[in-house]
Length: 99
Image (cartoon, rainbow, N blue to C red; front, side):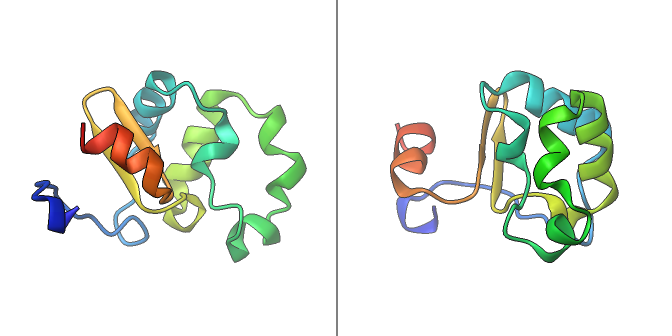
């Protein structure tokens, strides 16, 4: 993002996770499923046995859980208005943030 001159504000999601309300908004604005927002490779995700639980969660339950533990959130998380991306895939970043 830096090399393309995109201005952004960095926030440590582990130290200061988003609120449940923020997450509800972002999830609702996204066409992705709930699993998209979870750090499925993380230790906390595995320790909590979330692999089979996330699909059964409501959006509110998922938002509350993600807000309670920033390590559960897939990073980087980029948000601007109604645009939201989680994780890094170059083609998605190009299409979402550089056009």
